[in-house]
Length: 388
Image (cartoon, rainbow, N blue to C red; front, top):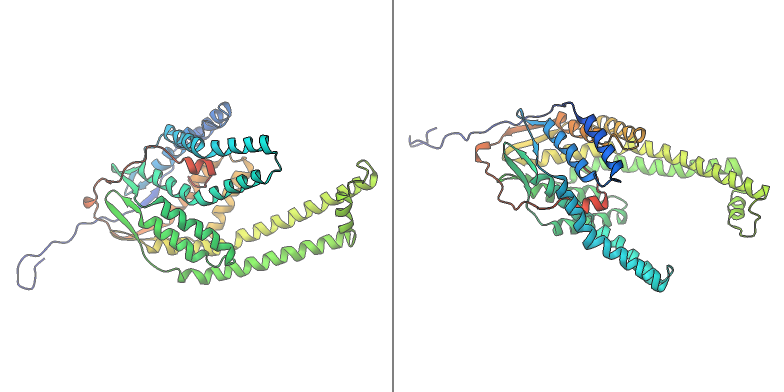
């Protein structure tokens, strides 16, 4: 390249296009059965090593430009992280509750205050669990010998997450798109691959049209459930419904009388009927919210850039619903044993539908200078935060 005065200018910047592929390989079933056996033998203590085994397998199936990812985490690190959280957070609270119940009695207000404080701590630290889990996973993920990193403040993200959780019910859910955007912006903005940062830029505006459709349909379903449930109860029992409930609550009712047994049977019939209605409502909601979630995933992917490349995710409501339905059925019919296959299906879905547009200067990426966490996802394991 030459400049206007004829002198030599800088040459074109070298770059590479990125391609993501998920290439399944055998062994996941053997890992699943091995994990199941050792979890049973160790009363689930093996779950830290089980989680590591699954991650190593799934990571190795993800290929970028033909080269597999490598997961270097260890079960021992996850175990130590869980021990730290148990010793610093959970054990003192449990001991305090036991002492108060013995000293003051289980009905004392102090016991209730401590229990409420415990749930408040869990609520406040949920965002930290998510953030620290992502930080650990990125620090143990390598491609071409370069590891990922998360370089921001876990406390800052925790405050943002807690605020988003509080705002959702206060705004009847209408703050969700904006707050999800803020959380994603913070998380992606803190992510690094080696020395090169990810960037996230956009607005939450394009999310609200699809969110309004899903929200209105969800309200219609909720009201329909209430009306249908009430109509079924009235059609089956009429004005006797309240008499049944009051009869169950009456302490002087003979426990073994025929009338009492009839009331119990009627009450159980009501409960199972309502359960069926709620199950149908849940299935309907599962059909509705992918309308928004697919849009959110696609928009957030398009807002993400890495060097001179940006991402495109071909997520649709139908494909996301089928993915979710298949995962739920797998979990139900295997009692959770097939969780590794659920994780594999989710990662494969993302890889198959992800496209990277533009180029990345791979030669400019150096090893990350961020410190590597020594222990694993203690909070995430203690709070049972979802994810891989």
